[in-house]
Length: 458
Image (cartoon, rainbow, N blue to C red):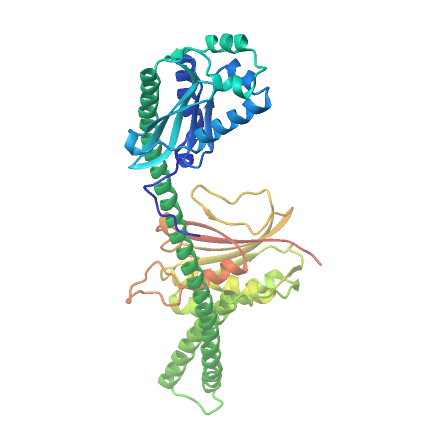
């Protein structure tokens, strides 16, 4: 977009407000009964306030006098009164009528002129002989009658009218110019703001592209590092199992305790690495679903069993209650089991020793509400029959103000370096992407997470 530089100079055409100026010219014409016209410096007619003139009409019916009238009008249009005559000039027609011309100046420059007339001058006593010389057949009586119908104006009066009109138009031009400059400055400001906005948009687009590239590299890095860590870690856990089982020989009690600690820490680290791998797939848009007919209760049992050791270590009682009327459903068993496992893991971690974690499954109608006052959450979609899996604990609970934050990746409510509960803060973020969940939680009373899925039976 080209810049706009506000200009202090403007032409008559730029400043002319037709409605206002026409009204001014019309008022003067009605007051004095003579024609008034406004021209620019190129001789272009800008405004016209005509008046009846039977003299000119009659003379234009003859070829020779019409030709002379044309010459006079051309002279009036082309003439620009100079500063030597005070910006005023009088042009006399061959028929004796006169025009008074007044230059319009603005900011030291002539921008146009006012033409007063033709009018019947006060000093004219008879029709000039040149009229009869040009056209002997003219009816002098008719011509005199026409002149008698025109308003007789003294030279001083015509000049006075031109001066007053020139002053009035000058004042109007000053006001119009002020508005013109203000408008130009406004346009310049808007265009400059638009240019700055476009520049900012380009910067934002570049930043967005850089962010996408960074995210892609980050996801690839996380996937690569996680994969490289998981392979040797799986071996460490496997060898720990073999040592515990006595394949390499019987272990003393203290040795067995050390090996169990290695295995427990290895399991925790493997779960963390698996979470990072899962989230990197989600973050890079490589998440795919492999739906198959699945026994949902089996997934719940596996998720509970996978977290039983953690529950034992923390002294938490882990139980489940499964409805037996749930048919096999078409879903991705791996992702649903991971989701349930993350919820169970969270429930155990945030329960106090001696606490209880309950896992349940059931069929619900889509119209059935699970929204106690204060609950937040989502439903993946509505369906007549829905499968509900809930994980409930009775631990510390989640404040209302924090419930919208817990699904953000790499987020934990306690973000201090000395926090009690480990993890990367990815579990709930993964669950949210795999399924949408309801959350109901009260501080010091515990939390209940609910997964609801449409039941699609193969």
